[in-house]
Image (tube, rainbow, N blue to C red; front, side, top):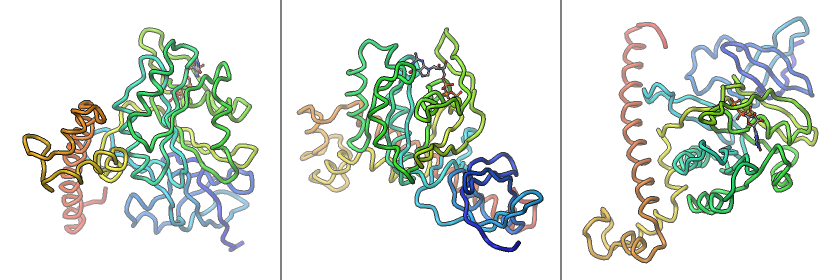
Length: 323
Ligand SMILES: Nc1nc2c(ncn2[C@@H]2O[C@H](COP(=O)(O)OP(=O)(O)OP(=O)(O)O)[C@@H](O)[C@H]2O)c(=O)[nH]1
Ligand SMILES: [Mg+2]
């Protein structure tokens, strides 16, 4: 059979892929020509792909369709090399539990990554049943960016889940991101109404999870929405994310445009709109620092990435191995 079909990547493990096609999961492998391509052209979970069906074994992935969104981050060894995570995501659920896991800074980072990749950031504050001052956290997260939506929920006690139904429309894709133990898989099970994903208790001493989910996986719900579960991430670095950072802090960008000097450093210059906003309380110093720090980290990692890709290219040109 030489007919090309259209399916969606639901799982990636080393060199083996799974394609979701007509409510079935088909094992698949890549057409050889992929191995001459750049890393970002390899399929990721969420990609729509054309493939050739094989009734006796693995289907053959022929091409990746154009992505409408693409979430990426620098790899954790801090070499500035990008890791391509998921694609075609409408909403990025930034899952944070309302205990030791909560971090204002981390939510802002995820928001930058989501916006950069073309997805809407939605902060999901889980385990609200364990928290006495949920409202304070909700307003703090709302203050990170006007682009972020915020919901406080408890998957165990069915609190706030009703609010999430608005995201679960047919054809919509949601990606869960956050630390291990934050409750990503538990939330998926609650939304799916069945135990689709394995979950496991966190360590009591520090509320940290045990990396129960080990790979990215796309799950189709009965109503036609899709959810991607991901393994917990320890941290999320910034690289090639400047536009996403600027979008997260779009009010600061807007204020900067009102400074008297276009190259204002918001230091001692007269007519500085940023300083004025801090003085009159419309902008917090903490938030301005976060914006500057994320931008600086992004620039550092970007410079490193450029250096490394130059080196990889040089090696390729001299015919020294691939990567
Ligand atoms: N009290 C309370 N516990 C919850 C809630 N949601 C999840 N948990 C618990 O938190 C623990 C971790 O949940 P998981 O869903 O496995 O966490 P995860 O984010 O998928 O973790 P990884 O797969 O390791 O990334 C489990 O023991 C859950 O029962 C909640 O709303 N309230
Ligand atoms: Mg999990």
